[in-house]
Length: 504
Image 1 (cartoon, rainbow, N blue to C red):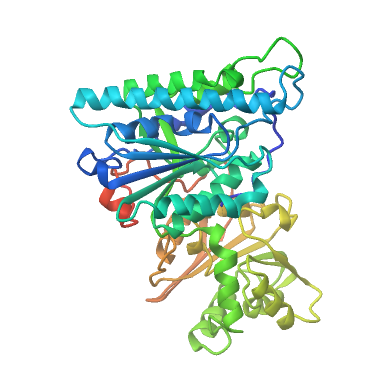
Image 2 (cartoon, rainbow, N blue to C red):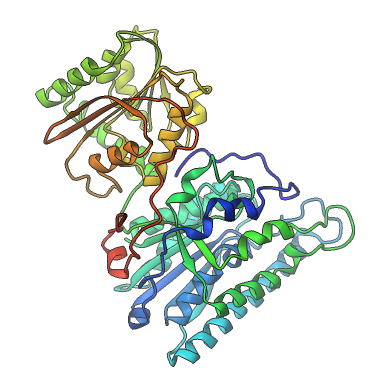
């Protein structure tokens, strides 16, 4: 999950206008279309869509649902709550009555989507896929406590479709609404366990995010909507009348979805964060590395391996200054490199996602009052570092970048750069071998960072190792997002976890 999403927003605020997203190029993202739902293989594919509340499916993934059904794909929607808490200040409807109303609207919306897909399929002379619904009946606003339950329900539904190509769609895990984030986390977990393609759709992100500073969206992909799919989506959104129109003229009955917010969902594309099957990201880091560090006190042989000791000595020798006032080490593991970096810094923050690793690091660093160990999955937990812009002099990202998704890596680099002054130093050090089950490798981590145009102060390349030392320079206008010149990924590529690189 990328950067810590705790935006202070309400639906009553104006939010980011759609014009800002259009100007930034949101409709020009690389295409997801390709053979995502190939009519030839529709019957061998199942799409599971997770919705925290009625209307999530229509806002974020209606076009996806219609496209899938029209290609003969069976679609299953997992509805977690009835959305009964959407109007907490209303005196017109009780929560029970509002939940009943929203549940009925949900049925109408799904019917609109299926009918739109049936029209497209009929014109193409092929059968439409089946659409079914599972309902969990969980309390609205409390899904953060039900992640395990939602993941189990999604996993059971995916296991009911053996020998089929699986695609999971869910709210973006950094959408900023606690229920959306929880459902996104739960279905991401289920997708990973089932080797399914994961498509995350933003809803409130479009409202609170800034397209210039919240740049992760530039790594996402777009699904072009056929005209009938777009019309079916519009009808489905309108079916959620309790959300798009006032319940009454009384205070507290205002629409949750303003006309300005709805503009984000009237594009001719839908936008998704895509994760290939069997591919982890930072959300998996804590569990994965807790297991590694619980099994061995030095799992990476940082103390015993000549390669590891030499690599650290080379990195330290490449640093351009003898001393740094305040540094940050991202991914400190057992503290072996931390103790050496502490000798070059007056103050050093050392962060890791694994509590087990930090326990071992604490033993290594006993008595060193200049080092502060921080439990943080970065970039999600960046706020835990309590670092202001320009406050660091040195940031070291060593053997950690390939455990992040591409948008997470670029977000982490962006946050690190904001924490450094222009003369601050950013260090990257990574192994060049294959990283099985994770999105990137060392070469990709360093090539993405090289796009930022920072002045490279020093570089070391060997068969197994890459080390780059950069001067931060100006942060404005620089981003390592993917080029828009991307080959359309075929279904076979998605199944194998391959994503085409830029062609320009």
